[in-house]
Image (tube, rainbow, N blue to C red; front, top):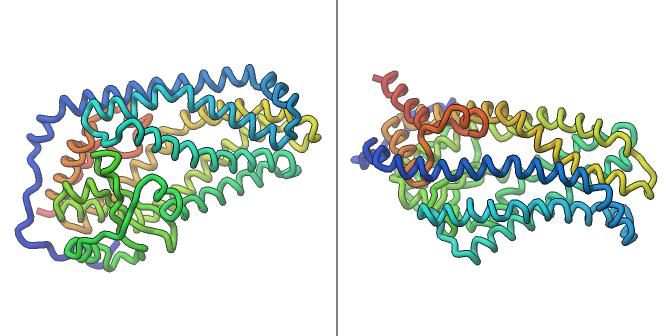
Length: 390
């Protein structure tokens, strides 16, 4: 915990919005949430059915590709492109309706169709590069890793996750959103006071340009070590007052103080070790096989994808529960660091209205899918903290 949990407050801060505003917007928020949830739920069986179908057609497809004589690495990459690319196309109508139609219907998107398509294409390109690396890692270890190929697969996946965590703010995020160091001296001074004594060294606080794409507000931490930084979206900086921005910043700082980035990597490592063991069992008949036997090995890839999808559904509630715990820890840190429960409450009420985030989703949804606590619970935490300090 930080040495000085109560940095000086600015004089005469603006009041937090009253709860009545949130209640007035609740019908619109609920309507938006119902449509987004329905689309999310529709995507789950679609994905499972798609990969189940590929488990049936995978071997004939691999044999057909083998007839082109591309070699096993060329055949692997071509098979992966067809299978994963097909998944993108099958999900495209849902993605379009979810990310473009619904967002425009509720006035949240600033993208025209061309900008939306360019944004999606950038995501596909980044996903293709990372996917090609993962596919090569999987089959490289399968074919050349020897008896302990699963160990090499797990170690390579963990190394890749650490490298990606470090590179996200430097390489990946700029492909989607422009950012620049925060250029508001009074606010920077306020945030610097909040960070002082926390024991955490940040590479900086950055203004993230979301407004070209969306009207939603967001904040995030990214990076490891020398690349560790906090991003505050321009949509947040424009609509939240300085007290509320301080709470949001302190929340992100709390993630750093509690080492949640490292803990998430450890959590992923633990969960992925079980998944790798299951994948090894599935692919064991193809380990170290002769080069000419590659079609059978490659045809097993859709099984890996189906297994991964089912496994993620099964472990999702557990990983979401851990993530919600991390978020509560960061919330508590923000309350103790700022000593301002009223601004905390105001920030999350404003966030609910601006992002149309359901403050009180169904409990089953929170358990199965939500990696953040319900906003109503976070607002209630502020009330409980205020009562503690009376």
